[in-house]
Image (tube, rainbow, N blue to C red; front, side, top):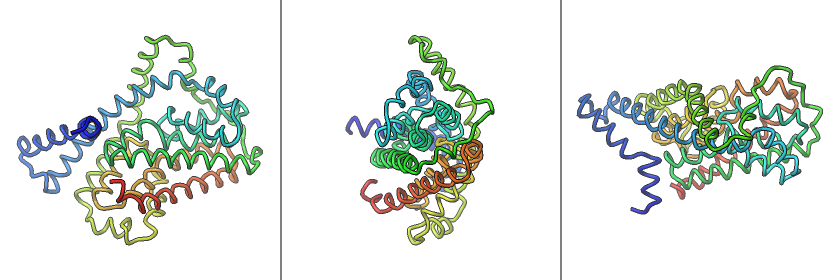
Length: 334
């Protein structure tokens, strides 16, 4: 086995953990994992432990990186770029910032108040919740590195194209003044020494886990329900290959939900295991992370309806195109 395959199987997919949980369910709980109850319990325990392990490691690592990019420093970097280059840099910086859209919006507000170009700020807002280092490794752990890398690349393209389009529409008058208090994320970290950065990463890890753990439990629970209790035929009738609108339906279903990628992946995994095409699964994930209803309500306090509608439209079209593209080439990636 190559080092890459070992890393993917044992470190990301944690096949050793799957074997351990299977042994526990069969030998200690005396349940057949091929039964509905046994399979649900195995899925729930395995996915929960795996996600929390990956969550702790990834957040610590990413929070450490984030400490080098507080909002003020990020603003200074972004002011040097305009047009497509600005959108590209902004989208890339979004990959090392918060994990959900509601956390990204306060930074977006800070960027807008600082007078950064509208397209640059929206490229950040699209990429931050949808594409990050955590999504790269988590998706690799569930769907393989090929799918993970292409997902991140296409997500960045959606962010760059979306920001560029918005910048060309001259919509600066669509920004509203936001007067409510927002947390100035990471501002205290600019002058940290190494010990302070490590302590910051540790504290941020505990804080984020405390905020998202309930979504993980809900997501894994829904995943276990889909995987073992909802008939596969019913799922495929709505989201399967035979329904040409499956990608659109999946994206729309995801929008009313609120979760970050950690709570969304177990549901996506269960859908994929039920036979739902990879593009449809990823469209659902992108709809949840980039266009959740709570984050759109928060964003509506910052931008006027016209700009909000354009933003939602651009991102939705990007998600749908990405979903259909993955469905077309997915068999060659897995």
